[in-house]
Image 1 (cartoon, rainbow over the protein chains, first blue to last red):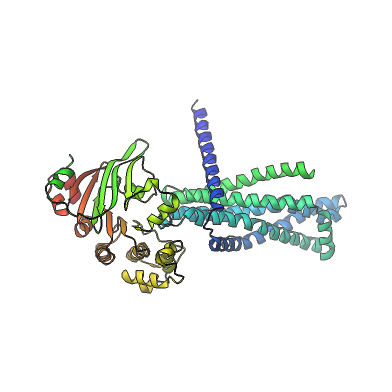
Image 2: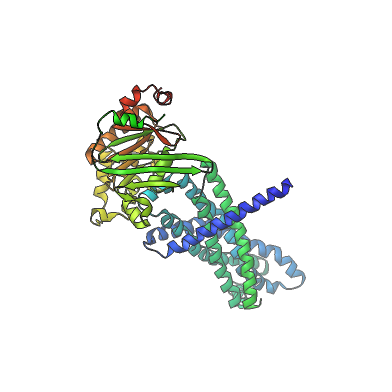
Length: 260
Length: 259
């Protein structure tokens, strides 16, 4: 009985959090279209968020490309299907692995960063100080960061996909002596409209979810410095979970429209 | 016991000037914890009013309700004759530019330099100074008032506790407010720095002719800076008067503050 009560309490807390997050998102949509706009801060955040993630995304994507090719090649060789390698790698990276792994890396870097930054601003009353000085902190801190994360992740994913494919090409070149032109011809021959566009569109949603959760956790951070750590941690956990949920929905919808 | 009325009746009104802040029957609870139970306050033009009370007595909650950082459960808050509950966001933001707030922990934006910290409140409020484009003169003037012009390009992490408090005071002054709210202005500072901050507060009050509401539990700060004091106990005005009047009282709860 007590176990059931505990589950009920946790479920209740979960749904309250979902409700608060929805309200937070609703406020975002209201604020994003009302003046004054914080263009300068938005550009600064785009630079910060993009710049802060570029190296991590690049290295992660490069390793993904290498590893996928190294691990898949022996199996394809058994069936004499090495020539399918570029097609297989490109479809799996562009459609699924690239967006999801890069989004998860981005979440680890950006959601925790935003959660910790806004959390520490909250507990040190910096957000209150903005509020009382007649500046709207929600617009200045939250709207700009969520928009920046939404706009930057697709760019990083495109860049990461390209780096991953290049990593894959290096292995193919070393093991199968395939030229750059031939490899990438095969890559682009295998890709269709239905592979690229839905994959890019879903990354906007990933970016939005990462920014939203990071800001939500940080903006309502409580309990002092302990709360800052919790905000950063739960921002990563919650946004990672949302990435998989969004991915499932995106694949489901893509399946309907593009008949994969 | 509520000695507010007794003391008020026993002497002439302290100040007969315009009321800058008026709070009537303010109530605020967090669950079963009733923090404010009908608090009343009047701050007059040019006055230094000190609000004393022990931790958890509702001082900070009251001041947060005053600037809209918290919503009271009931009661009236009027700032410069405007009922803040009737104002929309833009009107309230405009009114907030007339209220400076010095936070307990200074609350400097740690990702910005001292200059950027001071420029920040001006971003949306340049209309107060005829929409000027160059704000450096205002920034320098505010820093000169607190004696920290040399720190203009430093980051908050490079400042000592006292310097942070002075920069925060300069940021409070940048919009030339008519009212300044001080939340524990000397907390966390050593006695010498505390004295410097109190002296600075007095100087600023005389230079800018501001009305000040000072929340503190520092008896020295209250003695030096107050013209009138309110003692807050259990969310209500327990006693009110000048420092000397309160100091002379034999009531146990009052004495506990001065021990």
